[in-house]
Structure formats: structure tokens, C-alpha cells
Image (cartoon, rainbow, N blue to C red):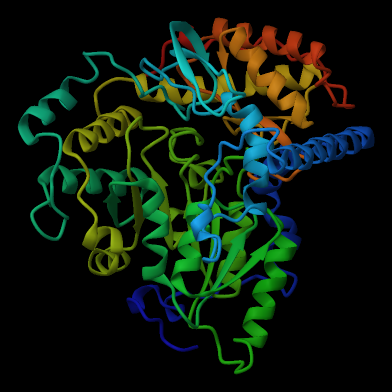
Length: 542
């Protein structure tokens, strides 16, 4: 194949094909069924009864019809239109606002907008305070009442290990760094913004992940969207999971590479595309692709599913492709010591060409990282848009990441970090088991702290969110277009900071609301699990 257009150490020629793979690929090898197959079997994707799907489409049909009726009332002047419109003197200009494109926003979303963007006025820890607001014009505008809902249980934040905290003893080093460096750098890493704390953080991240080198960035979204174009370009092929995050999708589109999408976690679909790419090459010319990059996530944030990493690594080696692994939701959250899906599946981190993750979730901070071979990182330092143009990470934020990571690794002299990792795993299994027992349809892997509960019907999504807030439980509800039109859901995120009493309180209210709104669609029968041990009550070996 042609040489790659970035450092040859990660070019196609740098990968050696692993012996022992037959023509059918990894997923047909009996000796490789181990952990990967067991993990995949733990994932649940139960289909709802047919009547639920029918009623979901009927519900959307009804609100769409009423939307057209309301548009008619606005057109004849019987109802006020609150959205931006073209001025009469500009009627002959090219329109800035496409009427049909705003149909969903003005007729569906506006009626339920009170369930999103709720103003929080406290630390977003296991509980938070919410400012009460009301609308006098059907959610077009809001006004605050001056009241506050206190101690709302937070089931929506990505605070997996509970590091979104304000304990002054834990945050003393962060305060010290703010006094030493200030809060902002006001320069890029390549100019005056490369501080010693940034280099300390990158060395720690590489050590934590078990790779040669790493590079950190101030924004998690930009870690994907601004760095993928530096890795691939025209003449390259990206094979992307159909449920990849928007940041991955945007980065792939900005790169100019050819993009092909394979079915979610489907190894047959991925291998078929790999085989076709290797055999056929580029369209029309049939020249070999400069690079073939497989892009996947560790944990998929809307499904709660875990990547089938060992199988993807084997396919990558077999077809001499590269692997880009986004561990935004999995780093710190899974694995015996919180090192992500590579540890969960006992995969050598060096088998992943580009390891990406964010500090916004398990570490209670902001920013992201890319890690791998030293040659890769050195190349990105001079070619990454985020490295060249973006301001360097705030020093107190860097110290918060260092503090959290040292805690997870046990380098702070305590067992608090590993206790939190185990507590999160315990909370995850307990919460998922109880939901299944109650009869809810939930998606994802048993080890995933992201727990989607399927609600399906648009009316029930709205009623569920409002009722849960009334019971002082903050939840995130998601619907079309963020999910398929027939799979609206509530997404719960577990945290090590959640106590068993908090979880039991949430489960009790979920059971009641599930009965009241008829949300228990599961037809499977689950045995009642035994009481799981409290990880807060045992002592860890030092």
C-alpha cells in the first residue's frame, strides 16, 4: 500500500499480521470466545411488543397533525408565532429561515422544552438544587419563581467516580495550583502555554493507560473533531460504528476521508467492509487506501453498550487497519482498576493505535487526551489543530485531573480510588438487576454505568420526566432525533457517590411511576437477585 501521510511508525507497514487467523475472521475462532463473547452475551436489547411500536408512531402522527393545524392558525393570524421570521421587505431575498426545518422545533419540542436545560444552582454531585421556573406561554419563555428544589437526586450527570465534589480536603492541591499558576494560560501549548503541570499530567496519563506517550487538550469534543483530520485525509477510509458520538462524526467529515458506516457492534458487518476495502480499494481507480481507520467507542452513551474490543483488534490486525478507540465514557468507569475497556477485556493497550478519552466524566474536570506510540503523539503536537490553535488547559483543571488519577491509581497513599471504582461497579449491577426485576426494558451491558430505560411513546417521555422531578429525582430523557423515532428513553448514569439508600429511593419511585404510566414493557422474567454486599462497609487491602 502507499505510505501514510503522517509518521511512518503508524503507517500500514508498521503493523504485522497476526498468525493463526483463518479466512473467516476472529469471530469464528473457538479459542477466542472467552471474555469477549461472555461480555457480549451480557448485553440486553429486548424488543417491545408490537402494540408499543404502533402506539409510538400513532403518537407522533397525532402531534404532527396538530402541528400542521397550529401552523394553519398562525398563517391566518389566529395564533401568535414566536419564532424568528423573515421581514416583509426581505420577502424576495433568499430565506434565512426554512419554515419546514423548524416545524419540529416550534410544534413538538417547544411544548416539552421544560424538561431540558433546567438551571442547577449547586454542586452537581449525587444531589443538587434546581431553580424552579414556570412558563406563561407554553414554554416559549420561562420565568423564575424564586423557589428552589433542594436535594434532588442526580441520576443524569456523568459523575461516575464522584470526583465532582467540593470537599476542601480533597481540593486543597487544586486551590494551591490556582494560587501558583492562576486560572488561565492565555496562550497555546506551542507558544507560552506549555506549563510543567501539563507535562506532568501527560506523563501520568501515559503511565495510567500503559502506553508510551500522551497529549492532553482543553476540550473533550475538540479532542475528536480537531485531531481526526490530522490523522486521515483524502485517499483514506474511515469505518465508523453507526452509533458513534457526534464529535467522531464531525471529525471524520472534516478530514475529507471516505466514510463508511458499519452496524453497531456487528463484527460481520465490519469484516465485510474491511474485506471489500482491501480487495476493491478506492472507487474508480481501485488504488489501495492510504489508511483504513476503524473508529469505535468504549461505552456508547445512548445505548449503554460496550465495544467488542478483542474481536475488533483481531480484525484490525488481520486486515492491517488502524483502530481509534474513544473511551470518553469507559475510562475510569469500567475495568477492575478503572483503566477502561482494554483492562475489562484484558487487551494489550499497544494493540490500540489511537487511544482517546475525556476528563469530563470519571475525573470531574474538563478536556481530553490522545495516547499511543511516542511517534504518534510527537506528530500530533505539530499537526493537531487543537495543539496549534487552542488555548492550553487551565492549570487548576490539570491539577484536578492529576489528583483524581493519582487517587484511582493509589498513588495518593490511600485506597479511596479503588473503593470508588468498585462502588461504581456494585451500584451499576445492583441498579440494572432491580430494573430488570421490575419489568423495565433496559439497554446495554451489565458492566455499563449508562442505563437507558426505554419509554417509547412521546407523551410518556414528557410525563415521566415531569413526574420524576416532582419526586425530586433529576433524570435525562432523550427522544427523536437524538434516538430512533421509536426508541425514546430515559438515560440514567450511575455514580460511586450514590449511596444504597439513594438508589433504593430512586428505584421505589421508578417502580411507582412505571406502574402509573404503564412503562414496564418487558416480557422476560428475571429471578430476584440476592442482596449485594455494601462496598462501603469493607476494608480494602493496602
